[in-house]
Length: 240
Image (cartoon, rainbow, N blue to C red; front, top):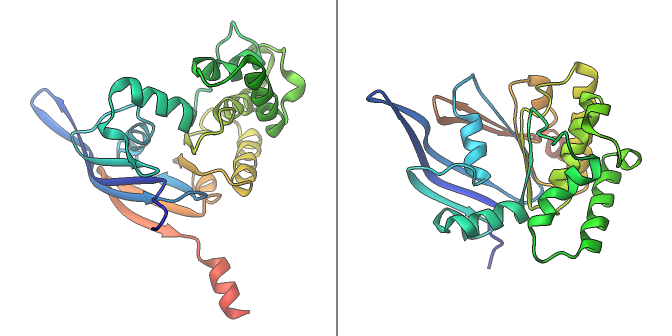
């Protein structure tokens, strides 16, 4: 029996109704993503990129279709079970970092883990330390977010997404609030994480950021209009 796709969206449709108008945020989306892939999602403003990521992250429902995560139809689960899946299997990286100012770095990274009843305090501590080391922020555990640069805050946000060992990392414009130097640093970090086995789906409007992905998906008016995998390594192997 073949291994299921990590993410499998089948004929997903999402419609917003405003003042008797129908806006198709997602229009018959078929998309399969396997474990270990690094996928960028691009397209013009309002094309459905962030809506697609919200659906993948179980932050938003949809009108029609099916969503399977690692073989389980998560779109058919109740709210409590979806929340459990979201907390354990999905790591979120947001453009605005979304760190809590009243908490230090360690506490911010640990927060999602405190909602898991399968982890002891000792296990949580070890997972937080491991995640912060992965993003080279282990030395800033006791600092407040306000004491960090934008690039450092995004590294902490990535550590928070990583700490629970999720099946997939969902990044929504992860460099949108950063200058070019810090943006490059964050993209290099995501590439490193992908090299270590992380599955990443990233929404971005920046062509330079999209170039880091190994597969590029494009949306237009809620429809998937392009799906391109990087083929250079394959061609090199053939030519060799």
